[in-house]
Each structure stands twice: as C-alpha cells, then as structure tokens.
Length: 187
Image (cartoon, rainbow, N blue to C red):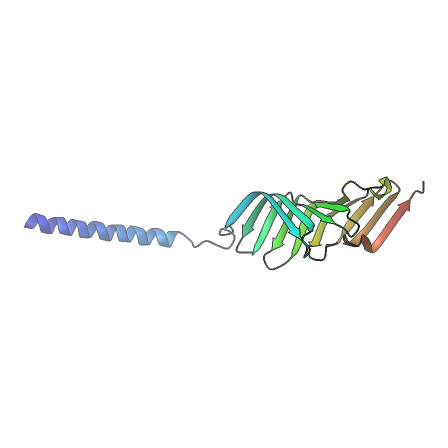
C-alpha cells in the first residue's frame, strides 16, 4: 500500500515540476512582434492570369515568376511581374518590372524597379518606343499607368526625359507632368 502512495506522490511531484517548467518557458519567450509575425499565408510560382472583357475578348494578361501574400499588410508581392494589354487599335503593350505589389482591396498594381513599357511587335519601326521609370502604378480596369518619378522615353526618332507621366494604354495617350526635355530627329 505504501508503494502505491509513494508512486502516486512521485507522479504528482513530477506533474507539478513539468507545470512549473512549462510556465517558466512561457514567461521567457516574448510574444511575437508584428515584424516577427510578418509571414506569408500562401505563395505561388509561375502565376498566369488572363482578363477578358464583357464580349469575351482577351483584354490583358498578367504573368509573374512568384507571388507571396502577406495577411498582416493585406498585400501580395510579385517577383518579375509582366503585364500585356491591348490598346484600341489591337496593338499589344508590355509592362514589366523587377517586382510589384497589389493591395487586397484595390485593382492597382504598384511596379517597382526597372519598370519598362513597350509595344510588342509594332507595325511601324517608328512606333517602337521604350518607356522607363523606377516606380509605376498600373490601374488595370482603366488600363492607365502613372508615376511621379523621372521617366525616359526612347524611340528611333525621339528621346524624352520628364518627371511624372500618365499613360492611357487603351487610347495611346501620354501626358507628362513636369520638367519635360524632348529631342526629335526627323528622318
């Protein structure tokens, strides 16, 4: 009988010791801060998204090497985003950058680092232009690209430097905001 009580007493002491160790380790571990808890809830590789208009015609295509969603900031980070969009004349324009971010509640893609806009397979060599900037916001529903950063536009006949730009891809209309320096070489 004494052995049973002794075994019961040892089990009780061992359980209390485990509880004390658990409580001690919980006090020593600080709660995760916002920065420590900034982990993605999902990611994807080889993203390919097509968007169609109300008539079923392909309107734009979005491709990214990788996408990572962060629930704390409610945003998605894209690596190597590439956007292709058609204008009213059927010309396909390509917008690409080093990375991009998209907020969960918005339809605007913010492109960052080595942003380039160019037509794919222009019908005329004079239409082969390259637009370069460091940061660009692309509004997918309006097919509108805008930036407040320095912009460089080059083509076979033209070289333009400006600060800030709005580009309506669908209508092929470009508006510069300030400090425009343009050089045109007629052929």
